[in-house]
Length: 71
Image 1 (spheres, rainbow, N blue to C red):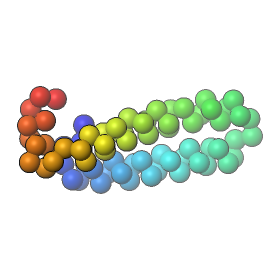
Image 2: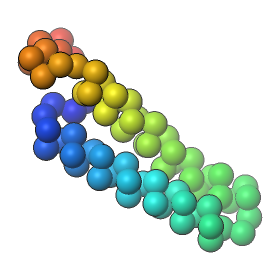
Image 3: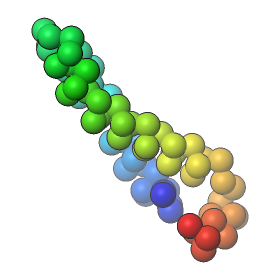
């Protein structure tokens, strides 16, 4: 869970980095099955981080403290 603006910005940077890694694998891996296996970890983590970003952006700043209490 993203708790503040600093964590949000860090997560956005990590998302960009993981996307570049997945793109690099896609361009350099010759075997499609190896590509799928290697990229799956990056894609799973991308899904998780994107969900965290979505939840953070969805919550109004005035509600973040309330949400953190129940998380």
